[in-house]
Amino acid sequence: MSKVAFIGLGNMGGPMAANLVKSGHQVCVFDLVPAAVKQLVDAGATSAASANAAAADVDFVITMLPAGKHVEMVYLGDDGLLNNVGPNTVLLDSSTIDAATARKVAAAANEKGIAVMDTPVSGGVAAAAAGTLAFMCGGSAESFAKAKLILEGMGKNIFHAGDHGSGQVAKICNNMLLSVLMVGTSEALKLGVDNGMDPAKLSEIMLASSGRNWSLEVYNPYPGVMPTAPASNDYKPGFMVDLMCKDLGLAMETAVHTKSSTPMGALARSLYSAHAANGNGQRDFSSILEMLGK
Ligand code: NAD
Image (cartoon, rainbow, N blue to C red; front, side, top):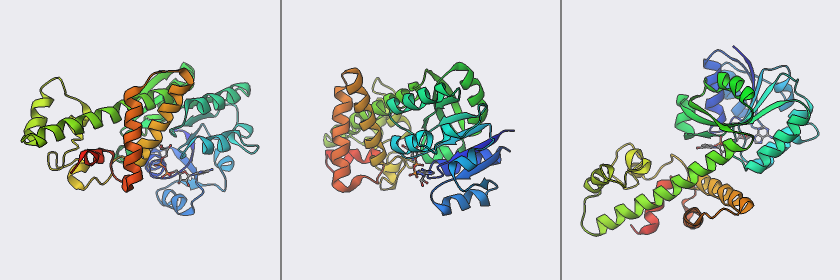
C-alpha cells in the first residue's frame, strides 16, 4: 500500500480520494474548502494545512483541480509542489487542462529530476464514485508503470497515451468527438420524429445500422427512449454543458497551436456555447437536442 497526497476534493476528487482510502492506501488530503476536507477525514483520510504539507514524504501526489491556472499555481508557484516534494515522489495531475500547461509542468519537473504525468480522466462523477474511470496518461513508460499501481484504485481502464501532454490531447480529442456525435445523434432523432417516427424505434434501427455510436447506445438524448439517460430525467447531469464548453475550448486552443482543421468541433463548440448562454450550462450536455426545437 502507498502513501498518497490528494489535492482538490471537489465533485471528482472527493470520491476518487475516498476510493483510495477504501483500497487501503494511506491518504492525506488538502483542499481550500474545509467541508470537502472534513468529508474525506470522516471517510478515513488524514488532512494537512497545505498542499505541500500533505505532499511531504509520500509516494504519490494526485491533483484534481479546476483548470490550468490552478495547476500552475499548485505545481510551479514559489511555494509549489516542485520546490517541496522529495525525489522519489510521483506527481499525477488528473485535472483536465491544456496540453501546453501539462508540458510546462513536466519540463520544470524534469529539470529537478521529479517524475510527473498528466493523467486526466473520462467518466464523470458516477464513474469517480464507482471507481470505474478511464485514465489517459502522458509521460514516461517508467512513470506509467508506477502510476498504474495507484490509478487502478480509482479506475478501470488505464492507458499510456504517450509522452507528456498526450493524456490531455487524448482527453480533448475524445470529448470533441463526443460533442459532435451528440449533436449529430440529436439532429437525426429530431428529423425522424418531425417526420412521424417513434424515437425509440428509430434508435433501435440506427443502433443496428451504420449510425451506431455511444450517444445512441448508452446516452440517448431523446426523452423517454432510455429511462436511465439524463434525457429521461429532465436533463439532470450527467455531464454538464459548462464542462463540455470547457473541454471544447481546450480542443480549439490546441487546434490553433498546431494549425489543425476541426470544422465539426468548432461548430459543436459554437452550438454548446450558445446553449450555455441560453441558461443551460448546468444541464446535461445531451440537452443540446432542445436547441433543435422542442
Ligand atoms: P470542482 O470544482 O468540483 O473541484 C475542484 C476542487 O479543487 C474544489 O474543491 C476546489 O476547492 C479545489 N481547489 C481549487 N484550487 C485549489 C488549490 N489551490 N489547492 C487545493 N484545492 C484547490 O471540479 P471537478 O468537477 O471535481 O473537476 C475537477 C477536474 O476534473 C476539472 O479539471 C474537470 O474539468 C475535470 N473533469 C470533471 C468531470 C466531471 O464530470 N465533473 C469529468 C471529467 C473531468
